[in-house]
Image (cartoon, rainbow, N blue to C red; front, side, top):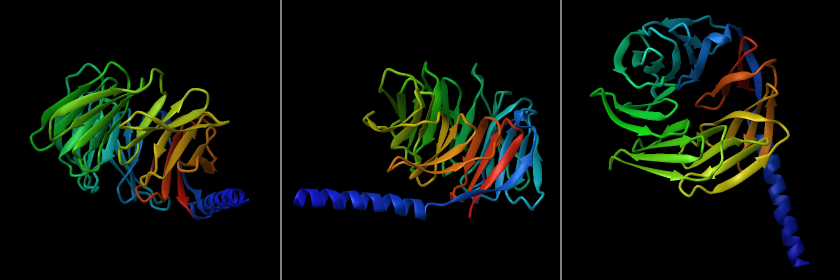
Length: 318
């Protein structure tokens, strides 16, 4: 009888926690709609303060937009001679780093939109994504099979992390001392900036459609086959959690706090997912075609999504 009572209390506590999660979680509502040629846009990223987004375009330009739908404020950055694949803000919002099919990585001053530095990349494969370290000392640029680490001040290439598998994500840890790389066949590469050593671990013998490191770099969330989402421990390679859903996940992104993920689905929706309890918090509906890219503001109060329906939508907490 005592055991049954304890089990019931534990079940009630667990149920109450879930209810509290639903009550306390933020609720998003669409607040802005932009009609654009989304087939010309490759990426969209928030500024650190969430007031701007930076877009990388196929016409070799970078655009800065205000996230306030009532303010018509846009600026264009020119300089690349080929399609811009990705562009991101520095952590203090003063610079933008971009990568292009013209085989250059460029740094831009946000205030003046002028080019600050340029890094030439002579590798065969085009760079697909690029990011700053939080201290603005290094940048990591990823192609389909390599992740290249550059020192910003000296403009020298520090290290090339190479793998035969498709690279899905690269992450600079918050302490800026380690860089993690995840591949499609569940191999992780760790580069230690202090020891200048790289180590690789192969986890499982199967293919992941997507993979993204958590903000602290300790876990990876991935979309697998059969409508499955899995959470993995980076150091051990063990599968921590797995959820099989009725919807088909296509890509995912962690919220900055690491407590939730935003899942882009085949049915043109986005779903907020609580990682601890494995429950859906909210479904965002509005797009009529596939969602190409999306991002979450650092304060977790705004989401931007870009779809093949030629719209960019902003979702804010209400």
